[in-house]
Length: 388
Image (cartoon, rainbow, N blue to C red; front, side, top):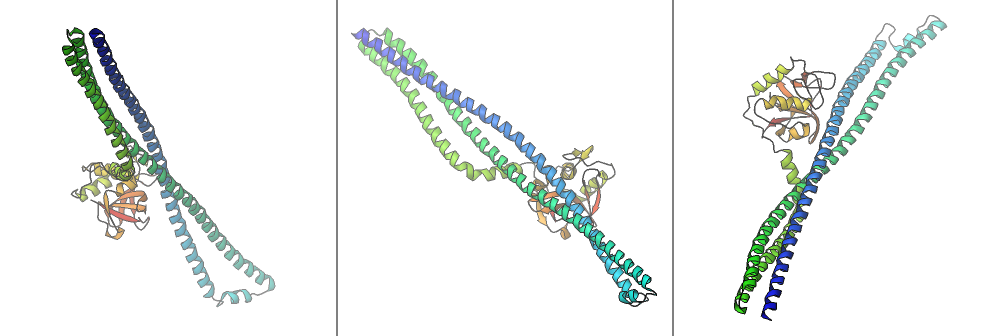
């Protein structure tokens, strides 16, 4: 009878320890799989972020091209209007005294017809030219409006992807914390298993009920320790998951912002005269505009500003909007040499340059052109920014 009791005790202890051990191993394995899944999602989302940024930069390049063309057409239209006004004044001040006298002072009926035809042709030609210029301006403006809308949509898509990345980062940290606790629980279970096996052997070797009961108590305590450890770990993980999930939305924006501006901070101690000299030196190297470029073999607008300031220990992101985060906004009229000049709205700029003084700046304009000096009067920036 006593032998049967001892045998049953050994079986119970072994079964309990096996259940604890298998449960812990299964949980650790599931968590590892979940971590791998999140890592894959992070990799896939990062690829989408890069593709989205590529699309956005191309659209911003088109914004710049359209705005330059609109400025040029507006200038031509104003010039044409001035020309028409001058013609009108000349017609009123000629020897005939007025345009009406010019038409009525004809020597014959055929001469009058010729004079009417001449005036009509002149007026029609000028009006047609002006109308064509206005039509071109409207087409470009319509195109720019579509590009602006596409830029806004692309920015929203990029923002969603960045938020997704933030969510995935939180999930990954949660899973790593969970796995660490599971690994700790697994270690406890393995230690408990070893203790229980040792106690089970002592139960088998017991020669009396008293010895068997003592060994059984030791084995039971080992199993209980492992079981309670897993239980507390599970409860703790559940609470942590719930807490972290509820805080994900709150921390999302802060996480994205910190990521966007986590590179080396800009410094206001940079020698701006050296920055101007470095920027001007690039205009002598015939560096072509290359979208996404940031080297002497080719660069775009934000690539140029980032390249110049990198020579002075300031790391700027390769994106106009992101570079806004490194400056204090100011009016263009208050810009100092070395400041950045931006085109577009605050938070949605599409072009950037380095101000060098005297109403001039260095920039990488667009495809087909090289890094060169531009003038504020020729193409006026929207606002300026001084490095913080």
